[in-house]
Image (cartoon, rainbow, N blue to C red; front, side, top):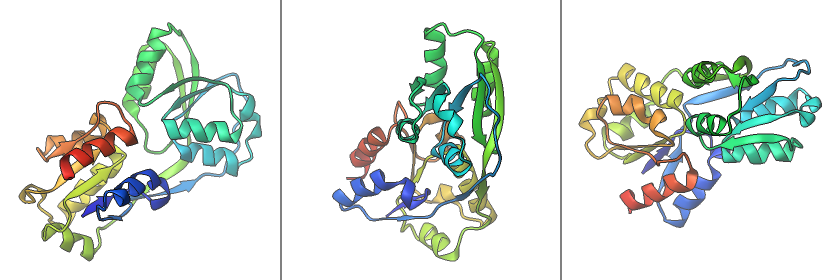
Length: 235
């Protein structure tokens, strides 16, 4: 059985593919989200959007002036949702922050004035590297990422009795939260010889790699590539 650590509405593609291959799974989100209520004044900054949650913020707060702004986007789904919202002036799109940094450098874009619409949890290394490239970056929190406090008894039982073969993670924060809660509940993952961690990227997988757990991740963050790895290793 596979544990998907994301909300069902955000994992449609993965669950559909698992259904096709008749692989059993269940959802156990490790975080919840709260969209903040605030107004952002119009400015000449280029906005970085790396999450669909940031677009939900724009919708909730009627930030329609954004439709005429310039954007840099991380993630295929985020790109699609931003266009659906009416934002057409997308300068760059990348699958990951690493790829985005390379694209900015390749296009020789210099001294960009950027504003990153993010959660309270965000990729600080990405912001640090942008600043190293002499770009101005202002981080604005537009939603909260809230971790769960405990694992329920049913999940602990399934892990301890090897009923869960694989876990899927889409963020490093979710993986770190899971590892922290397992330690709190005295769940020894190293004794679970058949358990595998499937992560959307190498960066996300690092906390599990440090513990020498069995980890799989695609060379480029992609739902399709992650599914291919799962099919190859699980079927």
